[in-house]
Image (cartoon, rainbow, N blue to C red; front, top):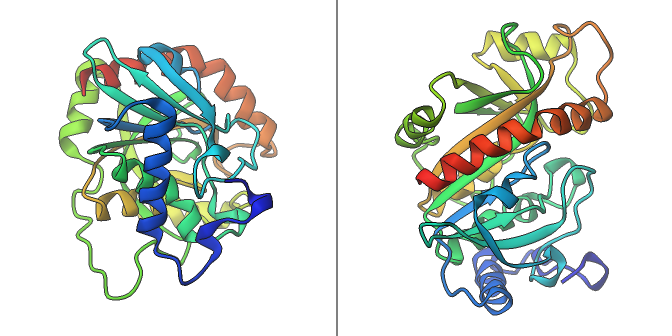
Length: 277
């Protein structure tokens, strides 16, 4: 269902979990797969991983599924894909991310995660392209997310819904990823509202409060995934050094270019991690 015909999640009386269930039914019909085991959201720079995970058995525009929107950002492919791994597991690959800064509301931001949960997935892998604060990280470095700081001032949880986020980004899955690449570093991801890049002062604030990575996605999705009972693995691709650390102006083209350059290496890494799940 595209934005031009209206999105059911824009109705404040709609139950977002019922919309997710309808979306999951659409995916089952379009893929012929009743239940997916793993869900993977592809952020900037991670797109080629879908081709390396296994055999693509179905691919279609995300707008054919209830509640999904067209991506507003270059670097996001706008499709959903069902991939069968060599072990016979079914992976739902989400190439259509709605960002908070698009102004559609949190329900639409986390709809893909809730749909994945309704489709049966118990493991959620979230990836993004982001700015790095640690000076030892260079553009093109993949980093595990160990925790996050939500600076959006918003939440996908509604009402008196209390969810424990103590081990939000699974230690078990991070340890598993390091069996694939022992050199993987990790850090705390700070989600800002965007769409403007962070100021040097905001980056210094993020560093002071314990952040290592700055970006505009992932944290809200991770909260929704935990609410749905999924185990979460997060990866950031450091596409640039954050403002005040990098001496040149920031640009989205820089993010795209860094992602393209790093894509073969990080996609292979991600595919091997998915294969081990």
